[in-house]
Image (cartoon, rainbow, N blue to C red; front, top):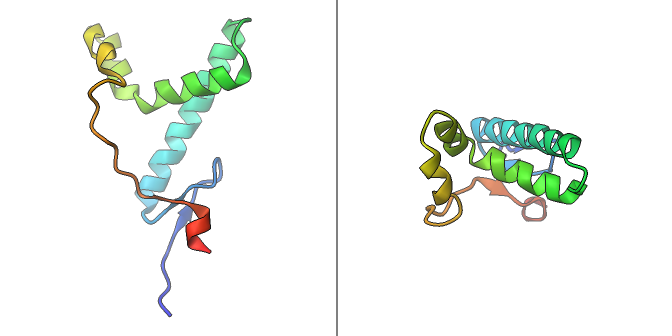
Length: 97
């Protein structure tokens, strides 16, 4: 029987076959949590689920957000339209049993 090393993200339970990918995913979730807290703190009309969804959106597209802040606001119009499919090394927990 072969042993396969896997890394589990504590925040959402995602499993990765590469430590670098697991760390990047964890950092993305940490940033999303920070964005969600910021949004919830500054908006009375946003609920927790909406804040989390927006936090994830901002976190997943941080490079475009940074570019927009540096003087290229047009990159924001590309979010969610013509993006290439993201490949992921996430392995569902059920698949590892």
